[in-house]
Image 1 (cartoon, rainbow, N blue to C red):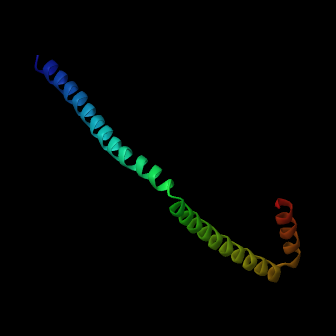
Image 2: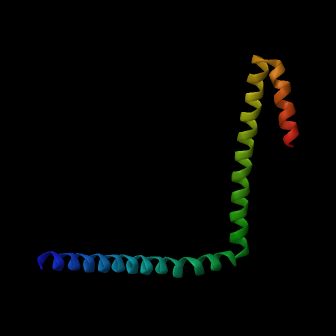
Image 3: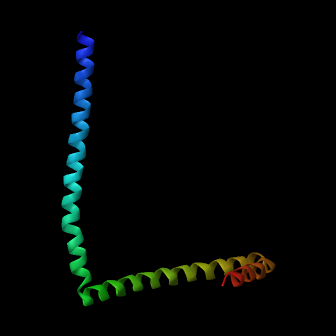
Length: 98
């Protein structure tokens, strides 16, 4: 009798805990969504704000592109010093991708 009672109570406690956790997450995520989605729509309607964000992203991508180009040129110089034939093969492979 004690074992049956204990296992049923444990099952009820598990179900209650999972429902409570689910409701807690639901309320938390709804709260975030109800605030963040209108804020995103509000800020995206401001043209100057959107333009400034785009300028920032373009500047960041431009810097990353320049750094990558410099690394590529440094690698080509090292390859040229070590093996000039390998440089020709690398240039041909890169040219075929473009």
